[in-house]
Every structure is written in C-alpha cells, then in structure tokens.
Image (cartoon, rainbow, N blue to C red; front, side, top):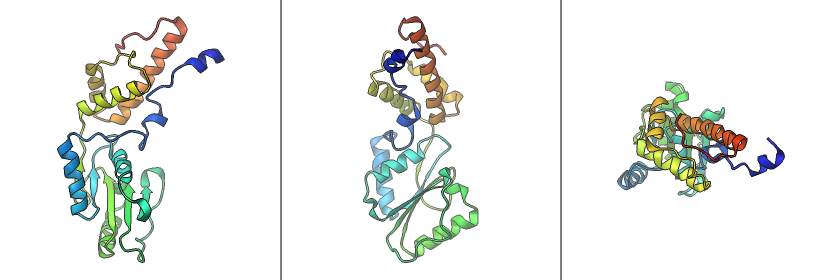
Length: 212
C-alpha cells in the first residue's frame, strides 16, 4: 500500500484504542437495571462485586462508575494488568474506596482478609470477579445480543463507517460463536474490517456486504 493510500485509509473502529475499557460507554440492559445498580451500590456503602465471565463488560462498568464519583479517595488496583494488591488495606484512611479489577485472582484466604479488614475500617471495596466472592453482587453480567448489536452500531456510526454492512444476524452469530464474549467479538470484527478495507484498497470497489 502506498503512503498516500495509508493516509487515506479510514481508522478501524474496532481497534484497541477505541474499544479498550474506559473508551466505551457501558450499556445497561435497561434503565431500571441501571437505577437498581446505583441504588444497591449506595445501599451497601460502595461494597460489592460486579460478576460475569471474561469480556462481558466488568472493567468497562468500573470505568463508568469512576466517571460518576469523587475519585479523591479511590485506589484503583487492576490485578488483570499485573498490579499487586497491598498486604492489607491502609489503616489510617477511613472512608477510602478500593476498586479491585480481577478480585478472583486472589486466594480465597486473601479475599476473606480484604473483605473483613476493609469492613472493619469502614472502607469501600468494589471488585470485579468471575464468580461470587463473599460481597453483595451488584450486577450479574450475561451475554446480551441487543447490547452487542447496539455497541457495534455505535462504533460504526462514530467512525462514519455505516457503509460497512454488518447485519444484526451476523453480529449475533459471531457473538454466539465466541461464547457471548463481547471483547472477542470486537476482535473478530477488527479482522473483518481489515479484510474488507484491504479488498477496497486493492480493487477500488468499495466495501461489500460481509458474508463471513
């Protein structure tokens, strides 16, 4: 591909820089589900777990929460990015909120210790996990075809890429093939986009409907 063609080539809307946690809006299944989530979060004094399988939006929801609260006294720890959890919570700061992404990676004993010690210190503990971990479950995330479709449409429209025709059936089929993992779905659509743009650049015919 020439330098000129590379410059003219549109950005892939499914690139990591556009779909990584913190870049996408979290889409609740319904308005009532969103209201219930926030009510439960406050009712449990910011102590609870967001539970669900890989790639279902747990970290994205954490970022959504962070955008709506005062982060002055928040400590974010991502065990999914090789960060380590301190041996114990900070004893001196009552009212501190610990946000731990990937809480299930801790041993059962360390989970129990953190839950107990933060409770005794009246500190918040908001975590993500693949299963229940002894904290109130604030939201159980499951595969949602409608949400996946809306997300794909949102990404295409934000990049003026609606001419790349993804049918709803296609998106739902690929989501099912990836076991409901939205992250893997977006990785797959990245490859589809690259394939179609390569065809467009080589033949100059525009993007055809995807049949993969």
